[in-house]
Image (cartoon, rainbow, N blue to C red; front, side, top):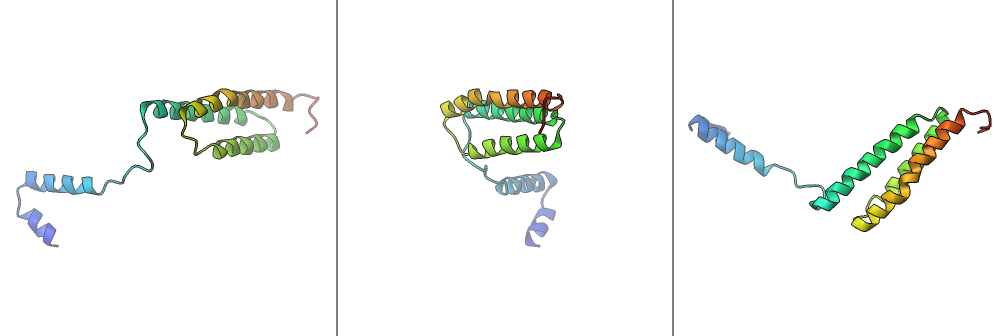
Amino acid sequence: MLVQTFLRSQPLNVQLRTLASKARKHRLPPDGPILGLDHFLQRARVLAFWRSIVREVNKIPSPAARQEMRQYARGEFERHRHITDIDHIRYLLSERRNLTQCAAILRNSVGSPQYQG
């Protein structure tokens, strides 16, 4: 109440400046440490990789195989969620590319007559 009375008695530019400065104080701190450029770039690559996995998994015709593959992919991502070493992240990205290949193989084989799953 006292703040509202103070603001009403001030010119508009002072009111706006006061409100703007108060809004800055309420900003939330970042969830974790501030990322460097290398971390930021690797994070973007990991997110792009995740999206490519989801796109490939969604193309699998069998709902059971699709759900199993999605659970596996999510489990792998969750298992490595807290890794911060850049070299390790790069290694995992290079090794995990076969996950999308596996999804593509599953997509093609599930519709074939040889599949008995």
